[in-house]
Image: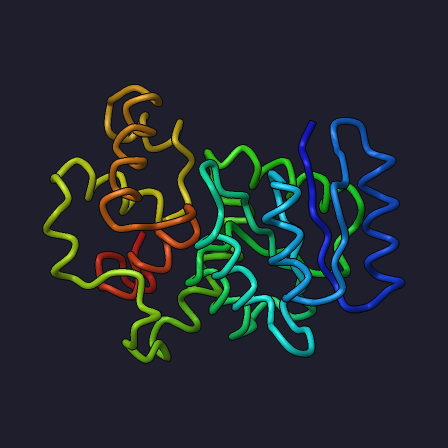
Length: 224
């Protein structure tokens, strides 16, 4: 069972999401929150596998709620899937920088939503890699270089050459299996290199690794 916490300030939207998830096999709703503050508290007590997080809420935004949930979570931390109205949204970019695992448009159909929850829970691939890459490329140049930055170019020196290779491929949207084929190594080895990279750079999600790779110039917009 995938344990899901649903967060949205609109009652009808939240209720619809809860009903959909409860009707889906393999899904369990462990709580629902109407704002970011409530979401942080519920995440600590219910320990969900996935948090379905509205990005724009009064009071604590989805960005700050994501940051606090991941910072306060015990291992394993939940995956955060952002719900948004616009795909090119600076708030969503901020949430990915904070460690969210992916995002989904609110007008996506039920099958798309369930697939997204399953994908971010699995964590071995980036959900909607093309859309995520387009968002990151659109906002990378606007990043302010403040403490929100996930890593510095100097921090990359802690990585081995193979870890750099894996990170570049992940940032371009490849799955572990695709990266393994490209590098002529096993999928398990790719996963090991990626996990070590994320530990060294204190990254919470694959999407956050993509953001870091672009912000440090390791991967640039338009790279094939």
